[in-house]
Amino acid sequence: MNRSFAKSLVAAALCLTSPGVLAQETPIPKHLQLARDFVANTKQENNENSNTQVMVRMPGEKGATDYIVHTDCTGFVESMLRRTKSGVLEQMQSKKFTTRHSIYDYHPSIEKGEAFDRITKVTDLKPGDVVAWLYVNKKGHTAAGHILFVDEVPVKVKSRLPYAWNSTQYEVRIIDTSQEAKSRDDTRYVSDAGLRDENEARGKENGTIASPNFKGVGRGTIRFYADDTSGEIKGLAYNIDNAKFHAQGTDWNIVMGRPKLIAN
Image (cartoon, rainbow, N blue to C red; front, side, top):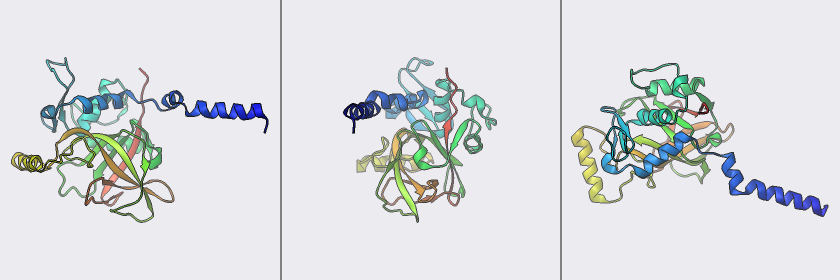
């Protein structure tokens, strides 16, 4: 091989693998960076999953001195998209509530490709994408479904329980507002036994999900199952002990999408 040509190949490889180039190829969307800020700065006393008296605040807004999250999954996603002037909300064709969209608006918008570019393969997910689902059987659920942000690209892992036939498992870091932690590395996960009992008792007393973990906005890990042949989403499982596999179409109707951002 010609020596000068070989040097050119090495230089090109170094350029392509340099942090600066990688950073340019995968910029973090503004709405995801803002969501990360809320996870990092919201104190637990100001962090609550709720669909009543909805409030999301940053220091200096309406007298707030701290970050405040008092909303549900759709309320948080909506706030991040609105605050960053993403232009996504204006592209949605339905609005169930007067003041904001619901999961019944987000799910079809993703499915139809309205305000989101539809994603079907797990490995195509990128930071800032959204994943939403509707529960096929609503029994035992306090909501109709859920929506979250993808925080990091999927990482292929060795398959473990719960298994699903002809599938490959991926761990995906996510950010959402929820009544339950998604994994042991979740920012809402509580390891102290006494505090877990206290949280569970408080949930029962308030008539909400009796979770031993903290509720509200946080970052956790979910396992995504991809079909071995097509690569398409086959189901999900939380990354915790005794997790259940939730099959696509049978248990949960799962859709994935990339917000159609308008430059601002």
